[in-house]
Amino acid sequence: MKKIARFEKVSQDRFLLDAGAVATATDYATIKLPKRATKGSAGYDFYSPIDFTLAPNETIKIATGIRAYMEEGWVLKIYPRSGLGFKYRLGLNNTVGIIDQDYYYSDNEGHIQIKMTNASNEGKTVSVKAGEAFAQGIFLEYGITYDDDSQEQRNGGFGSTNK
Image (cartoon, rainbow, N blue to C red; front, top):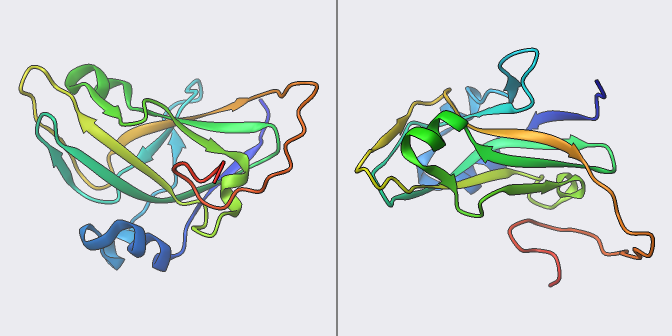
């Protein structure tokens, strides 16, 4: 198994700035780095730093307090936890989060934020406690075309490239 990445916490100031009024320094202190649940798991569980409840059609942006260093040629893809997607239709607003290798070096410290919506069509409300897994990330190797000539530098996320 290749070891190509590591998770780190962003600074407390960055976390509090991005989390806004929903999080505190106490929440920052309890942030857990993503982990695989079992030896055979592909996904690294992301744990919520806060309690949250979403009724059907409600949305939340979660500042995870996490950043990911990756070797060149790798990407981190973020998905909802399978059980939450299956039971509540909890999904990412951008379907799949793409964390590029160079996002780590952005001015925002490469802070991974996850925006989710409860798309339940059965009227189910979902509740997640601080410290519970709510999303998962999978590292994948990727390739580029023979004629690729990109020289641009990233600074930010959420549509920051091509600006």
